[in-house]
Image 1 (spheres, rainbow, N blue to C red):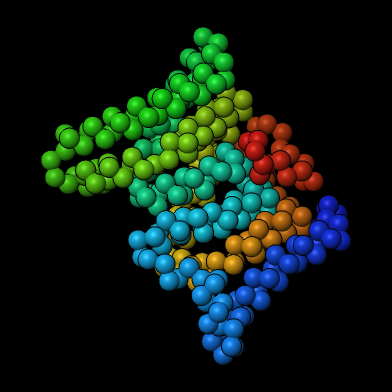
Image 2: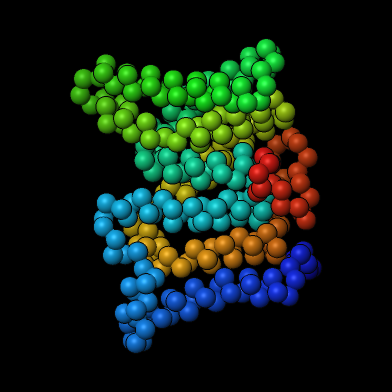
Length: 271
C-alpha cells in the first residue's frame, strides 16, 4: 500500500529533507568534541537566557510540539477535535492556571457560551456582533471570578486567591474559541459529537501540558531550539505519508469526515 499522497514535487521533498538535515547539522555542531561547539552554542542556544524569561520562551517552543501532537491525533489516529488551535491554546492556559482550576473555569465558560449563542442567533445578530457579545461575556465572567477572590479568607484548596488570580491569565481567545466551537458542534452535529470533540480537545491539551512540565524536555528545546524546524517537517511528513485515521471509528456520528486525501481537518475549519 502506497502511503504517500503524491502531493510533493521533487523540490518540495528536497525542502522537506532540509527541515531535518539542517537542525541535525546544528545539533552535531554543538558536540563538545568539535571545534564548532562554542560558536554554535552561542548562536543557536537559548539555555543562557535569564531564568525569568525561560518560562515565557518555553511557551513558544512548545507550540510546534503541541501542533505536531494535534496533527498526530487528527490524522494518524483520526480523532476529531474542536480544531487545531484550541488544544494548544488551552494547554498554554493550563500551564499558567493549573489543570484542575483551568478545567473548571473552562467548563463554566463553555456552559455560558452554549447558553448565550442560541439567544444571539434568535435575535439575528450578525456574526461580528455575536462574537463580540461572547467576548464581552467571557471577559465579564473573568472579572466576576477575580472579584470573588475578595470573598475568600485564606486558602480553600484549589480555590485560594492565588489560583483565582492566575485564572486572569487564561487567554480570552482560547475560552471564546473553545466555547464557540463546542456550541457550534452541538448545534450542527448533536450532543454526542460535541461532548466527544470537547473531551478529546481537553485531553490533548492536558497531554501537552503534562509533557511541557517535564524539565528535561523543556531544557532540550531551550538547548536545541533548531528542533522547531524538524517539528515542522514532522507535521508535513504526517500529513503526506501517515494520514491513516486508525481510530476514526471511535468518533460519534456527526458531520461527514474529510476524505483521507484532504487535510482540512487540521486547517482553519473545524473537523
